[in-house]
Length: 507
Image 1 (cartoon, rainbow, N blue to C red):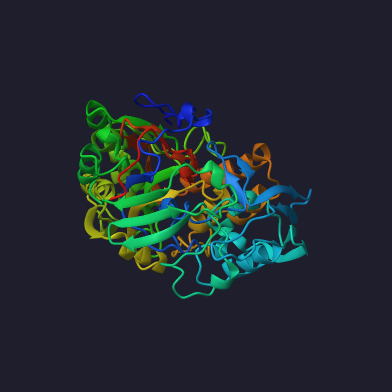
Image 2 (image 1 turned 45 degrees about the vertical axis):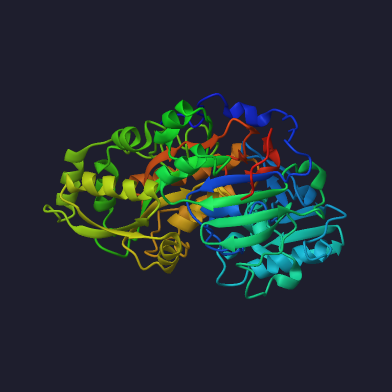
């Protein structure tokens, strides 16, 4: 496996861990609005039902109980301290005082209880992260205790993700929360239109002094070329790009940063559809992909070959993760063993974002070499999200967050019966017990062993999600951006890190 940590251009990932300097804007009375390009528009602004890949739209609006650090560790957020009991059945939180939501409602222990109880309701994407939670005890306004039915060593990660994003209690049942969010974050939503999501700094934020931006505009560009063109023309101050665009961006005088991520580009198989119930078929597809070629031709070499869900360098990565060496002859033999010497056909659904459409087309071409006929179904993001959540698909290509909010969440979602992304009820031997073992402590040195065993077991039996590669998460910035958006290894966006020597136009 290639190593997770990468660098590019004049800005390195290590710089994200250094103290940043302040910015000096051109005119003191001109608002500093940071304009950034992204691959699409938000699906929803309700964190309970938003796909993890769209966290960029949520981060300005909501603070989490626990904050994810750049390297995947944890730091104080709306909770200033926490303690997990030795049996991992109780998690005690001390809450930050003096915090209010954007509607003026005080943040306190009752607000935490209301949020977590609402998050457990059926129909939310985050409900599956709280299956171990029995009840929330309010000790006093600044202290709560989470009581678990079974060990919750993974709960720190859960509370640092979408589940931990606190919504004003009076809006938890609001039917329009998806477009009118009310959180306790540093920015509030001012406009939501097709192609642009606009935020303004909220002066009531508990740490407003640390926020130098007056506003943020996130511009949705599904087309990679259009996104870079907008940055080069001055329409944007910053943009997330495709790895093959790094050289082009740097030749135009833009600065680039590659962030390490646990996100994996992969193909999810529904083991109840097509021929995917057969282990030999899943193994054949895993062997049929020439990942090195895909990385070079599609990503310019900036997508580390993946043989498992977790990248090398991340604590949960297994040394025996995948056995995914490229071997088309063996792949054809496995199809023959499965009774499919002439191959078979299935439909591969993917996003119309350039990155994922190109990946789907490349997978289609490579699988044709072993006689597998792939029909492409290209959709916009909301439609693809709904399809994946419905379970009514053959296969879905895209980006999957293997470490967010916790590695065991990915394992339960994709590998265990009842998982939200396991409609075929794939069930590896010993899977339930290995996940339970990994949740008996928060100590990653202990947790990694059962996680690695399960990943190896799944790989040996033919994985229901075929990993392709771990893309470098590329941000390009105009010269006047002196410090970029900070993106953690788990995919959290920190706009408080942004510094500019001159303001964006805000137009």
